[in-house]
Image 1 (tube, rainbow, N blue to C red):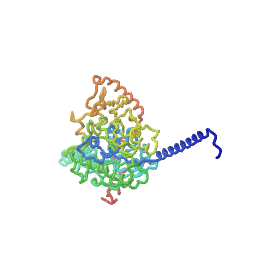
Image 2 (image 1 turned 45 degrees about the horizontal axis):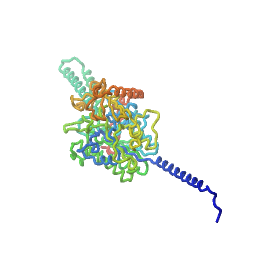
Image 3 (image 1 turned 135 degrees about the vertical axis):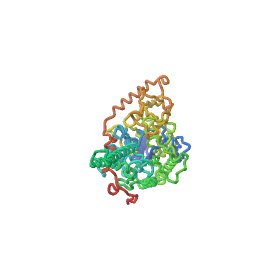
Image 4 (image 1 turned 90 degrees about the vertical axis):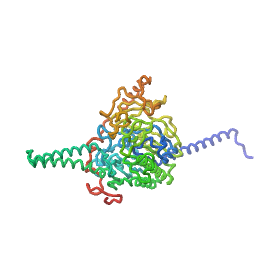
Length: 592
């Protein structure tokens, strides 16, 4: 029998074994954390155009069929207080892409025009702005945009593409550099700047009538002027007509085009096949990039007027053409989600669905309503402060990471998607500028009880119309309105006959003292509070006012992208397939 080990040696040995075990566990845990941090999910962002929050089944609609989006909500997290940073397409999407209020980059109206008007204009998202696509591209992601852009194309020449998606972090683009308008569909009433077009035509007619009157007077000897003067005046009228008709007379050819990367592939585009082309491109992009992390932003053309809908869905809904278009949109979303699943990417893809702002209440024709339903919320597209203009659906899904079937009732913003996506992609939010968005990751995963936003500010163009205060301790959500649009006719819920409500001027009421609502008790903004009905009225208004003052200290002047010089059509900037002005091609690249 060998010698015994001295007494007490077993304890140090046990301690050594435990230390080794703890070290191995620590190394294993460190490896797991590194692996988790190294994993980059695919990111699929789907944005509808002009969709009302009340148009979806998962947000309370029981007369429209949206089974695919409803299923997405069942499998993910649904936000009930998600807010657009602006009530119109161009500024809202600018904020979404950059995480910043649009006026910080000059992408909102001073006065006058509130969205980009032409592919051939020089305004657009400035080159010094950083999109989430650019940051993820630097992190090794494939970055694609399928669908609507509406952030500009060129600056100084037809080929500089300074505002183009490929100059803002996307390495693939297929879709409309502009947006749908009635002019895109032959036979529809003019939509783009119809009031200006009508005035120009009126001026032309009046001037032509004046020249004709002078010519008749000269012929009958009633007016003593030379024929040289008459012909000169006629030439001026003709040049005036040509100068404006060269743009407004060809809106469909100039604005309703499709591009693949820098090349125009269809001019003018055929709306009836646009949806199938976008769907094919989205599915193809997912298939091409299934073996690497990708960011795909599907910017749907649905459900913006003129509501072009395929025969498969026409007449199938209970709500006319608009309802048909919503149901077709839901089918498109379902096909894209199916492609994610078929390619085995469902559990590794962070998916998000939203709309750029509320439904367009003023969109009507002889057939009835052509815009969306904003549920219980007051107002709609184009109105800076009312909830119906800015409250949008928001659904997030990432199986195994985000809880399924959850609802979050915290105020959040479209601008929050920027830092959220950047964080998930392993990037860093820029530190050299104001970022208004806050990452949603803690809120979505349940690590945070409240939104990171205490105050949110709601603009109409450059004008602050309203602000909200999330008083987290009490759970109350205060909303202060400084300006509201004057609805027309009186007592209506929108500005019928105007197309959109104005941001300023005679069509807006300035409130002093401001209107105060408690959205936690009155989400429809039906009953403004007063000092008599709310003892804290003055304290709340004062607290929000302090936040507004602090917010305004973060503002700085920037070049306006919607100035007249940037907005007007410039022939030398017009994207064109072929030789300008004979711009025409079909999907095969040949002439139309």
